[in-house]
Length: 100
Image 1 (cartoon, rainbow, N blue to C red):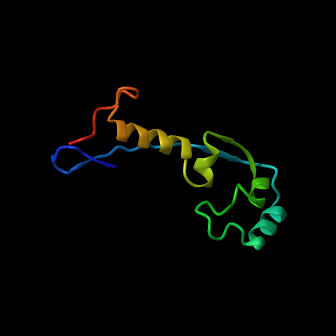
Image 2 (cartoon, rainbow, N blue to C red):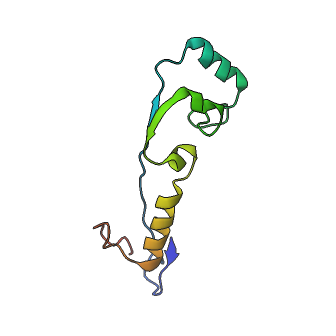
């Protein structure tokens, strides 16, 4: 979000972005290995129940898309979106201007 120079309602420009990343888990992971991982409690406070950036990476076969999106925030996409909103340039994505 960024303030608009004029005072039009709601007074700011904003946009959004959806990032999709596909995580494929290793089908050869045994119940014993999975139970051992659960017992580490590493994934207890993670949204997906595992930490790809830690020991949980042993459960993952591959990812398609942004690694940052799996860990937390898709940094590159977020920075592009911030730049787009600040510049007011929507032409590159063919998206309508979301400023009101």
